View 1 (cartoon, helix red, strand yellow):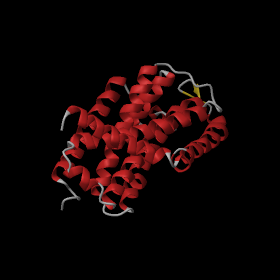
View 2 (cartoon, one colour):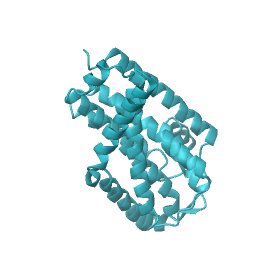
View 3 (spheres, rainbow, N blue to C red):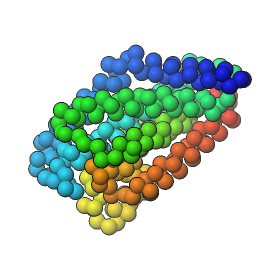
Length: 257
């Protein structure tokens, strides 16, 4: 394929992925916004007023970055796993794999679609959060880079889940039993400095903790984890997951056999 042909094919995948979730925005964008709004009301206003300040910030202000990131993570993952498995189920993915289109562009196209949905939901949640708090940005570059890179991580993870899934039930196992617990234990609602030493160290095994804290630093300027460590963890996961996803497509796992 020529460079122009590759670009057109890549652009087509992205357009397909974006149209897929934007056409049904009442199902893909609005529900997470409503869910996160309930978190703002229950945890921010009702429970937060009893907790008081955390790391020198109102509890509502402290949890907003974590809640935005939680919405981005969940929707980036959900978009790619459902889209890729849908292609497997309807046997569309075979057409891509037998075409001259390189597999790395297929992976990148699906991941870009996941990032697009993650950012769309994240932006919507951010706008809603402004109804509950005055949202200041400490470092815009950190905010933008962290949310894009984190969305890429979980888009890749969703793609891998989609490769292994053998039924529609399989695409909900990881979000339910892995992603949700890790997110809730990833420092969204608390600082790990509140925990005993053992649980602080245990929490540092959770990669979402690094992503949430880096994102929080971008807004508030405070973090339980150094930015260097956060970016390093995110970079390692992107490289590892991208390589594995590309390997699975190259061997046709779950598709050609």
